[in-house]
Length: 227
Image (cartoon, rainbow, N blue to C red; front, side):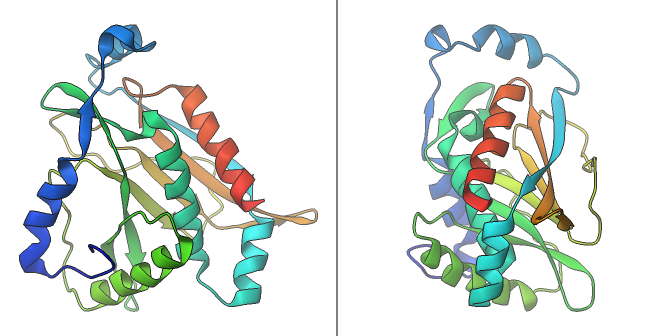
């Protein structure tokens, strides 16, 4: 999608290239995590995962009242927080630490036949623009018959939704070879707790890029938008 328009398959390569140029190098001489970066980037598996429940009462009630998509609204809130925290925009590109100007999202989406596809959503500052374009992306996915991952694109965060299970932990599939610096976020089945609605959230990050503090900020800021 670009400027509110869905890109066809013929435009996908050029669009990915344009997206990937919106970054700047991180000055390691002035970064307070340089020593941690140098330490963890040598790990065979530097990923770590934190799971917890957040309050979503306000957001869920809004979606039920307005009959709008909770999936798209929650995805928007998550992406808004991701873009607000610099460490979630850091990636390793050709052995160089870079910070992307803007991060978009690739999410799993369940189809009517219970198979799933990868659906991509551009970050929009305006929530209604995000919702409108998000619906177009979903409609485009429904006509696809195969998985179409965006290989080599770094200015993404990966999202999964597990609406059948109020999980307490999660492990993502991992392909061997190379260092993965793209965060992975999962939302689980929301549930009632006392007078509130709660939702399990899992965040996996690369320890060379971020620490538990930054993931904690994600949880805190996301709940401020959904509680």
